[in-house]
Length: 176
Image (cartoon, rainbow, N blue to C red):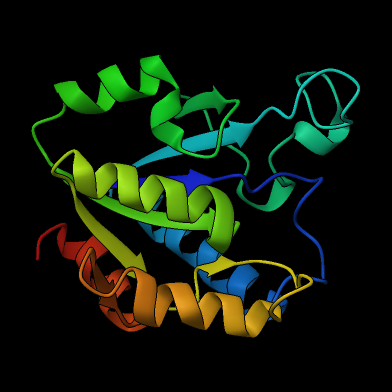
């Protein structure tokens, strides 16, 4: 299994996210447990382009300190919503024999959604732990409604949605 940590960048992670405290606590704990049990952690950063304030070299582009990559962990940069838009990541994942991806991070209705659907189309088994993706309120839905809509409806047939406690067990045992 690979733990994909998507867009946990300083320019996105703030208290306006739905269920912020739970989200941060759970994503941090999953990264810590994955590291402890030698489950590969792969980070993805979104580059919004020049003059966006969130591109390579900008502080907002950096992964939050709390889970910042450690030596040996891979980091890939994407410029579109789906992580599979990064050819190096796509090739790296293709070479792995384990076809299970545990996906966590931001934002539920953008990069997480695009990555979940792209992974499913490529034959990966996708695992979404409860409370480990979030987003902001928008003009149409609250962050809570958005998260519930994607987790409980849109991805219903695409992913293994597991409780947070089950996700910890999966990482510790690295099997389903």
